[in-house]
Amino acid sequence: MKKYISSTLSKWIFAALLSAITIVMSPLFSLPIGVSRVYPLQHMVNIFLAVLCGTRYGVSAAFVTSSIRNMIGAGTILAYPGSMIGAWLSGYLYHKTGKLWAAVIGELIGTSLIGGLVAYPVALFLLGSDKGAFFFVIAFSLSCATGCVIAYAILQGLKWFSHQK
Image (cartoon, rainbow, N blue to C red; front, side, top):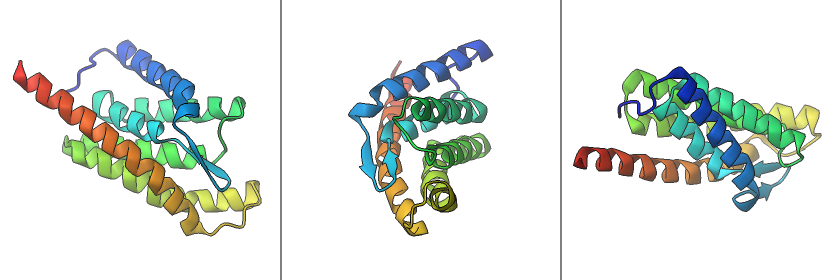
């Protein structure tokens, strides 16, 4: 899928806009699971930015979104490993392959497996959670899979629509 957003400034503006939308819409689409909150929209946005703008925009937006959620009390510190690792791997794999499915797989593995495992020591030492490591893998997987399916469907629709013109 070709990059639809071309200038650097436009990419930063788009990333900021998606971060703002994600923060505002989070209360409508979040679920508490143990000491974490899951946000499917974050994963959808990570894939959008990986495909439409690039890795650094996705990781930056994930960091900003996680930071603001923490500042306003709508998130936990566990948002950082889940969202940022997923955004990075999604962007990296999309950059290497140019395939949408690679961005989706990157988000799923980066957030669910790697982010979930990294969240365990963070939760243990900083939040005092006694949940096992695979608790976070499962919790992050539920959130991430939903966002991945939505992102894939929308981006496939954009791709189909752009070929119809």
